[in-house]
Image (tube, rainbow, N blue to C red; front, side, top):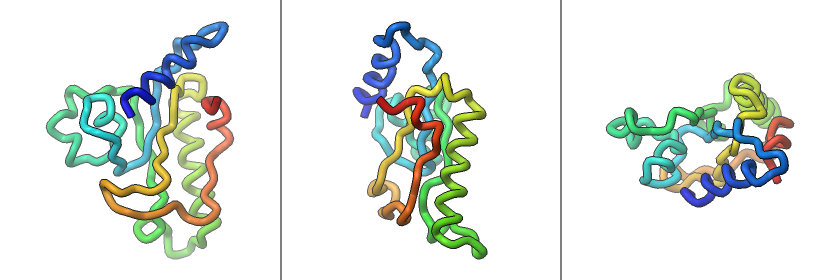
Length: 133
């Protein structure tokens, strides 16, 4: 995971012209990506991060996981739920500046925190076209 973070940065630095402004990362809450300072920064698990919070990279933000059991509102169906999540992610891209995002880290099945698959129809926002290579 640490190598993937570095590789995403290197990709944008190798472009012609380079894009050094790409220093932001977005991940899901309460994700787990590892135990190094970089991967703890990526993770959204509050308890695991707590002791190390002053050391963690401040270029990370986190969005809601695709977890309908806990996250879907009573009046939502699956389609409207995943549309809301995609909009939340797109809003986060816009908030931090889509041209500053280096990567969005999205595990499709979470196992270290809790095991749940993505909802059927889960989509990613248009903003991701700015970072996919």
